[in-house]
Length: 171
Image (cartoon, rainbow, N blue to C red; front, side, top):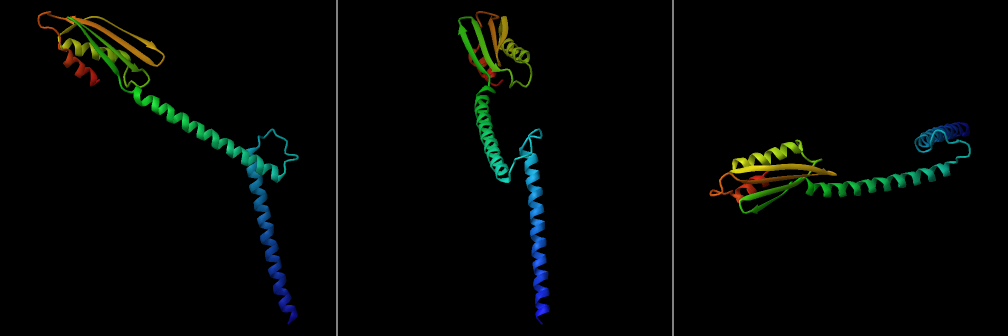
């Protein structure tokens, strides 16, 4: 009887040894994979202990997390900056029979070109009875400035500044 019991113990012992051996092989492969991900290929593999590898991996992960957090903050800042810049800022100044329209827009957020926006401003002014005397635009960084000077076709009729303002705000 003792032999039958000892054979089952030896089988269980071998199974535990095999399980432990497979676990060690799997862990070794995982550490090799971790090392290939973390340590640059030109780095000497001599002298890199598992503890050093884990410490290096931990610091590497923390460094990457900090970088991701910094990038998220930068993204939020840029989104906040761009939210206000998608809208055109348009000022209309009425000087007697003359009218001056100044617009500022973020040239990066325009769907079309800045010349199309300038053309739209000029068309609206013509449709509302203004004769365009001069029009210009210039870029300063990412901001495009448009300036349009006009006067009434007929000084008796004048220009409806409020209507022009409403239509320009729709742009």
